[in-house]
Image (cartoon, rainbow, N blue to C red):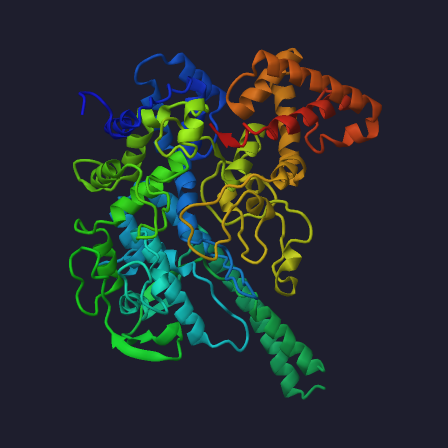
Length: 637
């Protein structure tokens, strides 16, 4: 390759030359800053970050930004959300009763911490699949096995527990195959794969790695929780002793409880209030359990017995007969295994370009699409794994990609590409991408100044439309809105109830978390625009955005206040034609507000800016709603 040329650009431009196409020019600085900020942290650049980047005219200015973003604690949140799709993370069991999982978030926080610390991907893999089996495993490594505790759990009365245990193991096999091998291994549950060289027997050999595992919740008190629980336990025991004494007295005196029953019920009710320390949901190895091929996938029809093993068609060191999950994990990230590194870099590439080098990220088999740039895929896989290259570092891989000219191209449409390459397979430009569900909400909160940037912690319940939680079993999943600053935390912290998921997330194509998803769909529907206009979260964001602009720029003329609003939302100033239209619209809103003073007074809600007439505040809220509903606001250019 030419001296000094970025290796990624070498492969892409070679293909463009072959197709007699030229690459697009580099995007302008503001577009580039917003793009890389959203891609690496999921948050827009602040006005201060915009000013600093524009002032820095050194050749290293962009690389400095990239390093800052990779070091941000919000990096782990952004890429953690991507990984949680693969892990089918949720805060409830699924199925009919869909019981809550109050400690599921401990796994989510492990993912964020691991990514922020740039835990090498081979270790990232091993700890999630077999952290409990590592020598002298730490609680943190055991917490990582929560990856496979995200399977659905059926707690309905009368179910055959073995049936649903087997279903969970089947899911673990299929998920492992999709995430690390990019293969539809689950197709082999009932018969040999119809297209790929994978047999039903090999499916149950993989099944055997997980078959003896037990779901175990381990005590894991949070910092400061131990002493708090100790005090709560003391008070609990004292009240229990009092209730027990009252019951014993009633029995001794042979009272009627009705009175006896009343005192017994009081003791029983109190027992449900027992304090408990935090826990983590883990997998642990149980006693050896024979594994059989299940005829037609039926857990009641056991066929030939098999031992754990890996598919013969995939290279890698042989796993020992009767090997463990740790053996499987080491096989997945072994130097000989050709798939894990390729599948992973392809997954990463898709997040930056909207499409993988292999478009079917979940299927590298014969029914999947062929790679658009096979040499580039080989190079990235080798570089990702090579100790002299990225050494399994996701952050180094991300930096490699986002510093390429291919990534930094403008996403502007080009007539000559419209017919020849409408899906941008050849990468002659960047791709405009609608932001993911959680990031749409995050950006509204960030622009408005409401966003709470605290990293980690229990799941939250922000406002949602009425009637959603009533859809759960016997209306059992009560949605008690979070109060205080946590109400405004990022979208990945929203409590995900599988049978009644947070509607804003679903409107913007969040997965249902029932199965592993390695690539989200992106739709464009009228309901999305209506949500941005009318959902409680976005209405409040508009109210707060208007207050922020009118407060921080109180002494400035409306034109400059408008500039500040657009800059907060889009990372740039409005063009002259845009400025004229928006100011004209502001004037129309002022007229409307003046004619309807009662309604206008209500529009700012609890975010009334001091010293601003109600009609003026209402007009700015309406304008903020307009800007927050722009296509550009929910799009990564």
